[in-house]
Length: 238
Image (cartoon, rainbow, N blue to C red; front, top):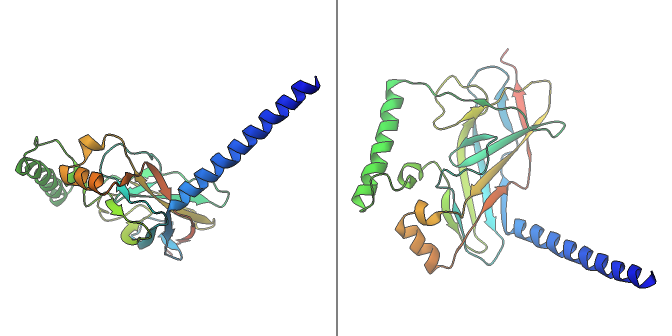
């Protein structure tokens, strides 16, 4: 019995040491890329009224690796949140529960249809001009919407984009959802970048693949969530 207890104790010590090591490695990996929201707060209305936020944030590479952030394909990791420009904003109530999101149906005005048709044609002809199948890559259609870039060791990159959180009266480009918030409650928000390392051979053009290989860059796979949350201020229209 004494021998069995000793063996069990040794196994438990080994397992605990492994868990501590694994946890430390995970925390270290998460710190390699640090995303910080630079706004003090976001503002929205309880009613349908345009309230544009200019969201600014930074991404710092604390590691000695070159990372490639690949947000150019349609295999999205996230399903919740307000997604725009390759960035996802998630809102939580005062109890830490994520709020409900509603589909943001875009206006079907003639000028919007013309814009979408132009983007589709631009993507098609760019593929053809580079010698690809007309519909091989969506990258040329999405490169202004999704975040696709290299970030080098110790480098900090700054970003900004505009976003309306509530139901808008005007077209808000490619924003896919909105929220209905109560002015009598407190809310906070985080932003997330997502990157997919899978199927890069079929999703990225030749120049990116060559640059990744030549620079021995690591294609980041997963989500990068902001290290800070900021408050969301909800105003009454009247």
